Image (cartoon, rainbow, N blue to C red; front, side, top):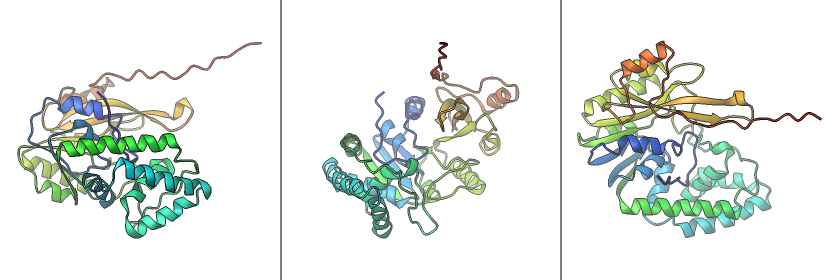
Length: 315
């Protein structure tokens, strides 16, 4: 499966998980794909449903994809913009980043939003209480080298074609508003901020909202799938077995590289929770039994990702 990576970057993007998610929904029948938490759009753009309602509480994400849909943002426009602004970034040794950030916080230009998402520290998407983007610069004045500009323009071109070939509606609205508009023939893919873990997103996420999300999905009578985390080496996500106790669970191992040492290379069990049985899923009861009895939590194939060995030469 060819993976289409969105031009907008953000921590928590599902690019490395979309093939697994797609394989678990390919046999599911539905009329409309609905996402209350669209984020960067990585899942929808790879599942490529014929009809979709894609929503988010972050207006800048929605404005960006609406601009692509209206053909106000094209690969040519992006290439020219990043070339010009990237040169200024290099000439000012990075100071121009803060000119763009201030300008974006004043007028919300979607091209400035793209620039910030690709030049900010660690691909973070963080806003202050007033809604201002406040992530610092990544400290790479030559950030927009020609190779990266070409990569981003190709991403814009790919996503533009996907949007044009489908019946996609983008809306800036709260998740509860989206859930109130569901039809029984919809398939909902929900990817809320991961509860119980530190997240950087446009809004925070609480236990109350997690419970509301579950309740509204149950009452909608439609099929739904939710992305969350099941466990890491430190603890288990107890909400999976309380709030979502009536759901099937599919799990996949996902690695986060947080440093050069092996001790900083941490695996997390990502989970898909659903009210329908998926290709890889098992019952909530079975998963709880596995955890309690120290058995494998994986329902998909394990990752073969060996660390390079350090060789010792004796002289």
